Length: 430
Image (cartoon, rainbow, N blue to C red; front, side, top):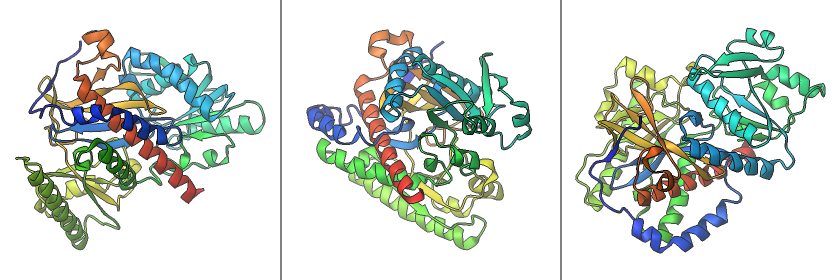
């Protein structure tokens, strides 16, 4: 059953009228970038404080297709067909390179649905992973291992190394690999060896990508957009500070994080004063690379940085797969005015080639409006239909279509920024 979305302390029509008045110029601006700078797919997390709406994260390997509504998934079929043919004309055989989350049944449901979308688009689709954490699985995977997803459906997972052998020996043909693995641990040798187009680029995994770089590209684009819309770009972006070469257990490095925090709090307060916002600034400290909301720590006062206990410091410095974090992003916190029933929620937009296929509201029953909602222990999802005006509340949660238009614009900007970021990474790393 769908829950109810409420919006607290909404400021009214944040820039809705100014955007509508400049719609033609905004569309022309997007037309400069979108034919070139868009990833094959992406998801974008957006926080709405009422006084500002900002992108807070962009994922190049989205893992929540299982949370999309049926109408968005139907739209995705034509969009993925066009996106694939644009990149590899005549492609027929696709491999989804998945994460090794074979025990995460919701992740398995995600890749099953992604496979179904691509299959409905007219392609042969196989799912493969590297099984590096469970190498004996490759010995069993002469054809494929079968797993049960969270919904009780079945999904087959191939061993990527065995698949590569078959490609090399001309026993199978693959035209395109779609990455659904963030490559936090680096690029597996098997992936380097395969001579097949890969999207998103294997050079855009978290082994090489930095959030600070993404926000640099994003904020530059928002500066351009804001000039057209006639608004302060801060209303659609987050201030941030980057601190590198950090050992969170060393006092001198804690001091560097503290000083960066002091600087960022002051900058946010200046903006609050400028816009007459009677609220208290806060920030998040997070790894400059990584995913799944790991180690994201809200900070209400810079002094907290110096007072983090051993467990909190360990959480901060531990990345995916146990990797130690040495680069930290201090990012302006954006409180959320959205509620699902009584729980704070935030917007997550899904895109294929920068075309909307819906999304969801992520909510958390055990967190507050100034905390990280992408964390276990009470996280839930409510579908967001891209055609709510057509299907009503029978599909997804009702939302203000004018404000949703701003979310859509921000999602597109983040997608273009991600495309620019990928091209820049490929130039540096190829």
